[in-house]
Image (cartoon, rainbow, N blue to C red; front, side, top):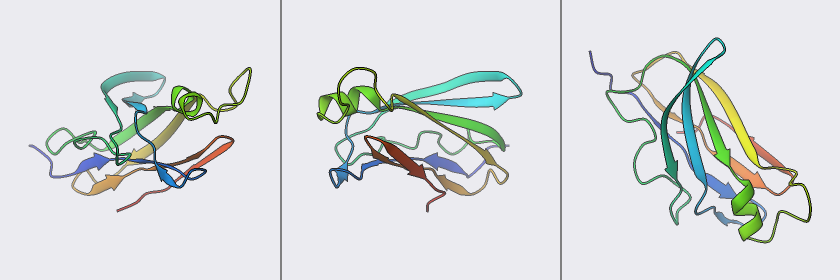
Length: 120
């Protein structure tokens, strides 16, 4: 039976005080040590994906992982520093227990730190 729940995300560059455009995001379904890629999307000028990263009907209870490829964005905006990047790929693993709800998992990004939360 199709579910009414869905997953959205966005990325805010807290160092610059603006949405982070052009960040690639991959979504995986996780089961034990197995990762199955579901989709890859890129953030738009508003720091969001153009559609839910996991739409209604495809959202299921379980474990997921979003990987935000922040390194190229930080380089392009002059925030990566020289040499080895402090932040490059940022994984956020989270669980869904109610596939009927809206899950919003944003990334607040700066060159040397990040945070996330379950938004609305």
